[in-house]
Amino acid sequence: MHTSKKVIGSSGLALILAMVLVLSGCSDNEAQVNNEPKAQETAAGTAGTNAPAGQKDGKYDPPVEIVAAQLAESNWVYDSGDDINNNVWSRYFSDTLGIKVKLDWTAAKAEDYTNKLNVIIGSGDNLPDMFQVNSTQLQQLVEEGQLADLTEAFEQSAKPFTKELMNKDGGIGISSATFDGKLMALPNLAGTITNNDVLWLRSDWLKKLGLAEPASIGDLEAIADAFVNKDPDGNGKKDSYGLGIAQGPVMTGGDVADLGGWFAGFKAYPGMWVKGSDGKIVYGGIQPQVKEALLKLQELYKNGLIDKEWIVKDGGKLGEDIIGNKLGMWYGGNWNSLWPIDVSKNADLVNLKPYSIVSVDGSKPVVQAVNPTVNSYTVIRKGYEHPEAAVKLLNEFQEKMWGATSENAKFGANMNVTPVVSYFKYPLVQSWPTTKDIPDNLDAVEAALASGDSSKLNSEQIEAFNAIQAFKKGDIAKGYGTMRQFDAFAIIKKDNLPNQLKSEFYGAPTPTMVTKKSSLDKLEQEVFTKIIMNKGSGEDFDKFVADWNSLGGEQITKEVNDWKASH
Image (cartoon, rainbow, N blue to C red; front, side, top):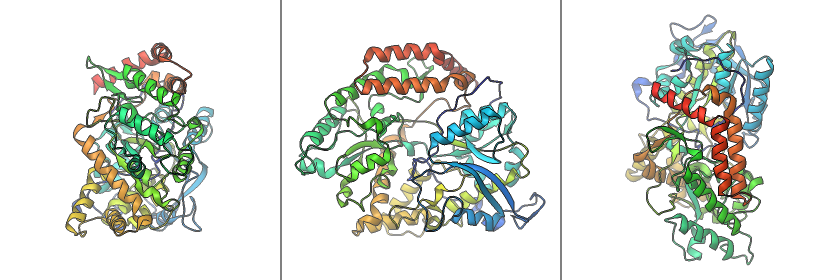
């Protein structure tokens, strides 16, 4: 836990919501445990001896309304007739709990959501009853006394199964949401190594060009050169790219065409706080290995092995290149097989497979660093009459996703249609078991495939088992996404589970982070992009390091080390 300190001003950090998570698989937003019967309660058991007045059998009577704000990304898919306001989850919450979530406003992009919320917070406008925040926004709202204390609500209303899952990370998430002994938010936990990258590669292109899977950065560079210059798709045109990168760039793993896996191959970890040679914590983005990794990317760019227009291409645009046989190699999350890869539009994409990421010196395994488990936080404004309603929504989300009454096909994802309908994205209040995908789902499904006995699988695992079986019987459209995602799970487990490397800092933003970090992050993006695109040099990186330290980074580093010493 931490104590709150008065800070001046606030600059919003980019809101990380899982999902890119696009599902996955989400990466990020997927996570789970194998349920223990003693920890499970059915949806009908919501009400307890401490149920607030106005509730009958766990359901508010009359119903309560929560005015909320939510990120509802433009690429989300709904069943016919449904939308973010009316869907399987909203109907279930209304029928089961008597809770109606009314969306005051939504945003189609994470950046837009963060920016709008920052304006509302900064202007003093009325806050919604319930909304999600990042760690910087949480700190500011706590300091300004605008949030409800959820300590009693969680203690009295959280089911045993909810409490079990919310402490699977060793209490890191709950601690990060606790100020002066008071729980001020519900942390949205996610998987840890589940967010690591794999290398996505067209195996048919490798075979056609007589190339083996890469074992080093040098091998990867040779593959990129062949993909650009040796017509891997056989159309007689020089129209394919080498290594895919998405706009940003995203420098940590678990996204689409990000650079987390690339940097890890140089033992470089931008965005992470890692131990230096003297044992003290240092910021990964200013270490010498980052410079080496950037200059190598610059070399690939100069040699035409990276798309010249990468800076304006997001995951969707890269998906168009993938489907159009223009891109056959990139670093990305386990869920990339579900999106942006779409085998229904190009059957040859069945040959896109995940591989281990590679290092500059060929050493194995390459271990990636990940942030601890908090994606975002759900908060309730101070003064809202029913703060416990947020806890009850969390109870039902976790129960219907992973509890004794779980129904993954109804509430998780419909894997039998293209594109996949990811119902799990819709609820505002959610949190994911940190070991759900790796190793829990992976181990359970692999054991069932080996034995042929799926009787011990939960509903989500059954869906995966059936999809993989369908793939093996030739139903590519139904099974490809899950088959390749589980291939990626196995690679990530093998390479990272025995050697997990987590960012050393997971506390609330330090005072200087609140006022300086967003500008430092912007500077980092600008300099790194400039270097990759051959408009900067190694000297620019050295100047960036000096500027980063002088503009607040040195003080932030001191505050991080002080925090670590107290924990």
